[in-house]
Image (cartoon, rainbow, N blue to C red):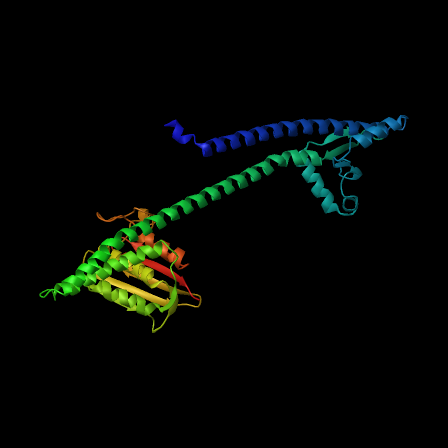
Length: 384
């Protein structure tokens, strides 16, 4: 059971978590260490400033060295208790001297980062000066380094996920193509034999009534085989009047529907809407939607097909007055194997989605569905 979980992806994820976690912990340790070291340097700098301000102190070369070395890269502001600027290091000299707003922003930002260091002015014991200081570039880099690592790790995980998803989709496509080709191949031989038998039956007297019906069924099998063959290859598209194409499928399904089922086709006064389609595959899409609508209505109701011609696309809505789709199943209707019927493989809508999206570069989705009222599927086909 555990071996199922500990595959290479899991181990890779755990390794990434351990590496990043260790790096974050160590970076925080370094940041604390550098922060303490910078605090010590600023305290020494403040002490040197205080000592250097004493008129009786003559070893100025020593304090000068401390002032120079301990202020490298650390931004410093030396102010009186009334926030009058006395000295500064490693900040924009022009702005800090001329822009009070900039100075106040720096004071506020330094307050948030570090507690200011206070010392008494040697000239005036009643005056308390304050040293505000920020963080050196080194400390900032150490603090932000874990964030950079997280971003890099996130990008790495994203790339791996995209790669795995692409491989999965490629494998899935290969399975679909293989299944479709094999189905077309398996149907091809017996259908060819049936065509031969039909020709023999035509030559025998007394079969005039049954031969046309058998011939229709054989043609139907040929159409199904052709559809599967086109799914297994790249089908050619051609410009067709989508109104005529859909009307043809309505007539086909209407003959097999009960007398209590009504069909309505709304074209909004349009008679010719040209669209690039693969006729056999697009017919299959409409047939699947109409048959699903019939199954949902249990023998009685109304199926409405609306066709709208827009500037960049054609919109086809197929609505029924059936029992509707449960909300919990709305995201599953196009998934392989999903079906509310006792028979069938649950591949009809999956194939429908594949045909529209991959072969016609369009979209298909459930526009709306209400329990006991019906369902509307919408197809969007690009023009041109």
